Image (cartoon, rainbow, N blue to C red; front, side, top):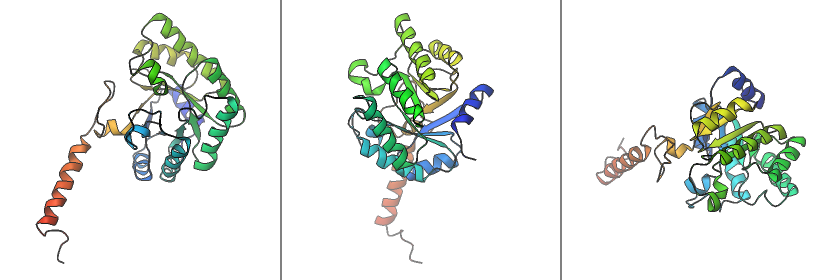
Length: 260
């Protein structure tokens, strides 16, 4: 049975952890879905892991739609969410509606995600949900603000913590169905999780969140650099390298293809 937004909220109430990973193509999405992941995020991190950029900023709306369409073809059960990329929604509410509408209509994903919680973003969330486009929020370290915030942990001072908590509450009140909490102190994430009625999905935010998400290249040991809050569960880069070298040797020695 396909995962729904209502199911995610019910799991929060039941204290059942929500499992999320990122994907950027059909093959990976199919494997993650078959493995039982609850939510698959087509994150703008694909700018770095799939396209080779140094940040998430260069990826375009058309590129996000291209990748999200491929991901959606590989998914039967998981809830699929796609990021609105940098400058595809920040200009105005009408731009946000247009961009989010394109993603949902052209890719078949269930929801979109956008970053931040200042009043302008809150207005966008409210308008998008009113017209039937589900929205996931994202507070704390917001990668699209890297040129201002950097990649350091957010919410370490009382003022920053209050701001992030207030943003999370405002996102929930505006109609967001879930919130990513990225690279914030564990106690702040616990407070947000206990305060808002919608699921919190942590990445570098401790174990008290309602669920966890990782960039899949980090999980699989394929990233050039793994963030301090992530974990590589396997060194797939080494496995792939060894496999390719074995294939190369077999070809060079005439062992592949088999004569039979």
